[in-house]
Length: 381
Image (tube, rainbow, N blue to C red; front, top):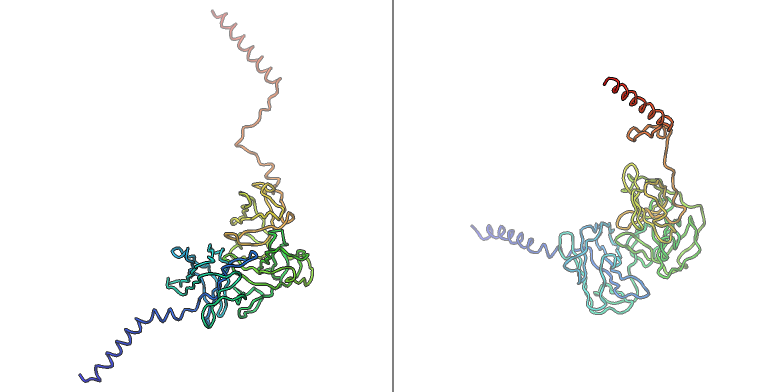
């Protein structure tokens, strides 16, 4: 065998072996989802947040990805199913994941669905109201947040991450009806909605059905997307119209519902527990959540009664129907028919209809028969 005849087969084997040895390192270097920003020490009641960024040119499904801080490193949190578009960032409130970011000495970890470590970041001491950001020269502290678009609102086009987002919709739950710190808007086609949140509780005069435009920061939690605003100056009232017409649903429609939809449901109250009602129809069960600001309470409802309830579809460990005010609840009369009221019940004992006089006559007749029988017996002796 000549030198040339043996070299190329040997070289091919070496290259093949080298590829498989380096593949895991190559794959790790090509990770397309990573930490982009950490906000561990905010003030004024703002939530701690962390931001992930998709630097690839394809959408990434976050289902199966896991995240943890130092305390949760051995028990990481699985991220929910969420489609993160190419170039898009996802801002998460730390508390919604069960995390509490340390002000001193913290490390965060991100794992791929296959268990491989995708990214990690750590800091020694967090300055007040300062964000830890990934830049061209590595991580550094900055006073201004660079990410604020965790997801695109339903009626907004795709766009790169910005500091603010503008959304429009119709007011379907007023401030203080569900909470003092937020209200809800629903899109005009009733295909979904959005929570408008203000920590300082600064609201303009709103009415149900008002068409408004809101500017704020979109933040994704594990349950929903909300728009954080600073105050009433971020809300522009476009017009005041009639309230949105609710969509009639049954329990068969639950899987197709979207958060923030305004719906109306009719069912029988089968059980209740503190602030939760269990309504059933012919197909299944729907849970109704009572909020203090709605003016509705557990004692207002009777088990076995049929109710028609209008409200918003929200997520509280599963889809819940949330009424906003007492007028959202209508008690329906139980259906009856002439056949039902005239049907005989053979299972119950009939009530006696014999009069007292009849009983007296009967007793006298019996006594007479006994006397005659006694006399005849004496005569025979």
